[in-house]
Image 1: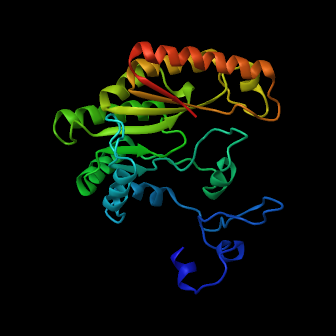
Image 2: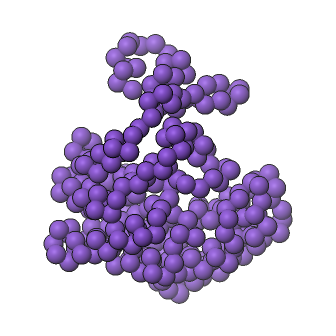
Length: 277
């Protein structure tokens, strides 16, 4: 981007961006074609350098001050002083409605890289120390990729808080799938300080979940169980839905709305919050 901006004040169109590795542009508003350069693929070594990221080059204080000004009554469970991180090269799933799952995989030569548990802990501790962040948001579409990796990282965070390496009040946020969590993972996440988990459920109708429009590869029952388990352990559980799509039926819609209604009632009884997008 710096290269583009340094070249003068021309129009910022696809021609300007097409030869810059890692930048994706919409080639045509009529065809919807995406333009991106895959000649300079990131290597595993380069990806693991993200573990040394400290956030010092981002003016978080200005960003947080602005957010405090526009949102002075934020929820007590979710502090505004949050830094965002990426820990995987892409989401390993293939949901057909996802706008970037194909081109991001192409940009990485379909090689899935994940930071190791000790690298994750090092990055988190460095960011908290350097920026004074009170929370970390995992911006990966699937933050819990690799069960053994996730369990080890969560246990490392618990230990780090116990021995003073991380402040006890540092909290975590992120998004994942309902079929990558269970009671054990959610309990560990709670112990580590997770205050917000967002699930890409899309629908609580089995017919819809199996459709070519959603293709989620889990059942409505599995989704319902995961959300209920999360409500037992995590202060805020968010459920993302896609209510209307090409093949949706009246029954699909009704099943989803009815399940969401019951889950919202469950959240009131359990004392934790549930939001729906």
